[in-house]
Image 1 (tube, helix red, strand yellow):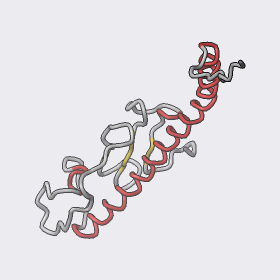
Image 2 (cartoon, one colour):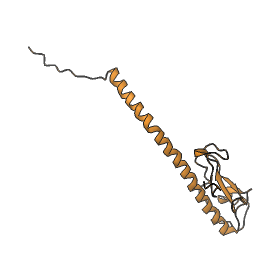
Image 3 (tube, rainbow, N blue to C red):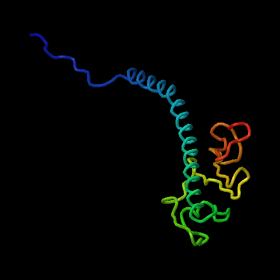
Image 4 (spheres, rainbow, N blue to C red):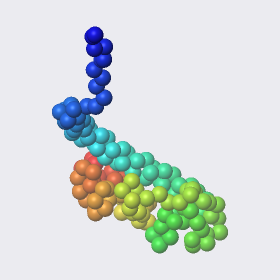
Length: 146
C-alpha cells in the first residue's frame, strides 16, 4: 500500500520569521525619517496657518471695537469680553484660542515692535530663536528674509 498522506506545513520556521523581521526593520528604518520630516513640515505649516487665522480674528475684533486687544487682555479677548468692551461682538474664535502645534501658547504683543501687533510661536523648543523646527514662526518678515 502506498502512503497517501500529504505533508502539510502548519508553522513558520524561526529562520523564516527572522528574515521577515529583518526586512520589516530595514523598511521602517528607510521610511521613518521621511515620515518624521513630513510631520515636522506639517507642524510648521499648521503654525503659519493658525497665525494667519489669529490675524484675521484680531482684524475682526478691531473692526468691531476700534482697537486691537491690549497685551493684558491678550488673545483671550477674541474668545470672551475680558475687558468688557462695549462694542465687542464676539467670540471671534471658537471654541478657544488654539495652542501652537507643539502645545505652547502663541505670543501676542500689542502694540508690536514689527507692526500694530506681533504674533509668534517659538517653534518646537518653545524658546525664542533657533533654526529648522526650532525656528520662530511670526506674523512679520525677518530682516534676513525668514
